[in-house]
Structures are given as structure tokens and as C-alpha cells.
Amino acid sequence: MRRNGWPEMLFHGLFVIFILAPIVAVFVVSFTDKGYLSVPTDGPSLRWFRAILDYPGFIDAFWMSLYLGLASATLATLLAIPAASAIARYRFPGRGMISAFFMSPLMIPHIVLGVSFLKFFSDIGISGTFFGIMLAHVVLITPYALRLVLSSITGLPRDAEQAAATLGAPPFTVFRRVTLPLILPGIVGGWMLAFITSFDEVTMSIFVASPETMTLPVRMYHHIAQTIDPLIASISTVLIVMTLIMMIILDRLYGLDRLLVGKG
View 1 (cartoon, rainbow, N blue to C red):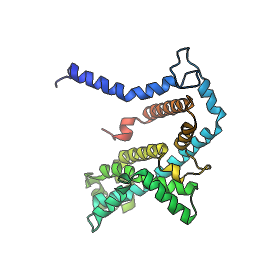
View 2: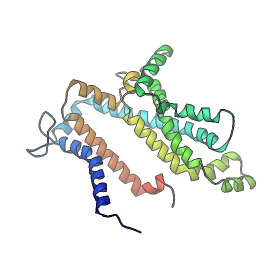
View 3: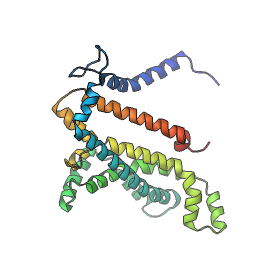
């Protein structure tokens, strides 16, 4: 096997630097003691991390984003599993139309979805409620969960399923004991991608959220619109560190390769 030469290594190094540079910049700026965005030349300071406690709205918005992401990602994944099974396993009239319907939120601008949901939810009386914003997020993130679940089901050998059915196992038992473990990496990966998409969504959420259901990205957007200070950088650093800790815990407990790729 030919090893990468110095041009390939240089390209890979530059690519990694390009990807990590914004994250590193946010991390460094969050430790400034100045009242504006700057590199902490006078030494690191925790001033803007302590300032997060002075803004309880950000803490409430974080919990709202967390609950919303958990609920919408779980519901979207539960919808994606039977939809992916039907699309991948069966041939029926309108199959392509149904698949395109589930994927259509990927082709519609989020601002269009936001305006549409705002009008629809206002007409039926759920505008600004947690249930309404959850439904909007489910519509938006279902394609992400469906794509990964569909990829795990497509091409899956059916020998084990047919053997279990031949031995007398009912359909639900075949799915629970045979099919589900085989497609679990796709389900977990789809759920994680759907959760991240829901947690980070801001364009559509601006239209459907209310002051009581304001998510963290929307709260950060409104704060930036009013003032520019390192507070947003400190909040971003906290989120980055929390994500790294969660990934390390998952890797130690289960293994990210097994969780997302499956057993080799």
C-alpha cells in the first residue's frame, strides 16, 4: 500500500486546520476579560463564563433546546423506521412519491417552512406552544433520520429474518430480535443527526417559537442582534466542551465505532 506523500499530508493538514480554526478561535475569545471580542492578551479570564449565570434566559433556552431535540429526534426516528422499511423492502404504486414526500423538507428553504408553519399553527391555535414547535422540528429533521435508517436497511440480507420466520417467530419478534439489532447503527446515527439538526435549528424556529419556547440558538441570535460581546463565545465553548465530554463517555461505555458503524 502506497503511503501518502508530503503533498497529501500537507493538504490533509491544511484541511484539518481549516475545519478546526473557527472552533479554536471561539474557544480562545471566550476567555478574554475585555468587553468586546478579542484575544485575551492580558491573560485568560472566566469573566464571560460567570456572566452566563447572570442571564437565566440562556439556561432556560438550553433546557428547552435539549427537551425539544430529544422529543423531536425520537419521534422523527420512530416515524423513519417503518417508512424506511416500507420503502426499502416493498414495491408498490406511489413508492417514489412517498419517498420524495419524506425528503421534501430538504429542498424547501427553512424560512419558507417557518412562515408556512407560523400561518398554519396560528390557524389551528398551537402557535408558540411546545407541541407546535416540536411538530415543526419533526417535519424538518425526519429526512435526516430516514436517510440513515434507509441506508442501513437497503441491501440488508434477509436470510436471518426468513430463518426466524420459518422457525415460527411472529413478525414483531423477527423485527425485535433480528432486524432491529442489524439496523441499530443506522437508527442511532439517524437519531443523533436528527438531534443535532434540531438543537442547532434557528431559521425556522424564529417564526414558530414564543418567549416561553425560545430555543438556545434563537436566544443567541436575538442577543447578537442587540449587542456583540464575548458572552456568545463563552456559551459556544460550553456547548463544545459538553459535546466532547458526551462523545468521550459514549466511546468509553460503548464505543463510537460500534455505535455508529456496527460490529466489525
